[in-house]
Amino acid sequence: MKISRKIITNLKKSGVNFYLSVPCKLLANMIKILEKDKSVYYSSVPREEEGIGICAGASLANKLPCIMMQNTGIGNSVNAIVSLLKLYSFPVILLISYRGTPGESVSAQRGMAKITKKLLNALHVPTLHCSNEKHLDKIISYTEHAKIIESPVAILCDFELMKGEK
Image (cartoon, rainbow, N blue to C red; front, side, top):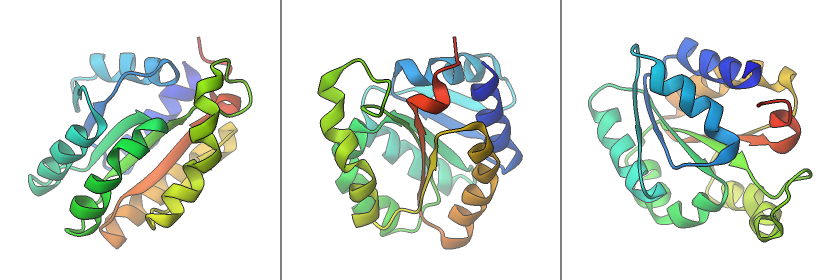
């Protein structure tokens, strides 16, 4: 759980205090950590776009929100990202398990993996791809960047990064 703890610690250091998630096995340890952490708000949501709407509301209540999802959830969330988060300048952290990357055993995940970065780029969402522990130190600067630009940023966590988590 070392990687998961470091990710959550870096998010908290940068002020993230409101977390939502759509279940994913790569995010499972982070979810376990957040479920026990009474210093932040955490809840699961059934769909990514619902979570984005709730994050917008949390931002209006002076919270710094993070929604955790699979990269396949970005496809479900395009309209909510563009017409809500981007349009109304909500700094939301999109913590994304980068499914379909090397190490993935579910072949159906590979299609979305091929276009994840391109899709985030088309949405003008600054993206940090974390494939090793050294990249995790950049989470703080990306979170700060979201606050400065008043817009979402994405943090991609791939299988290479998460392979040691049990």
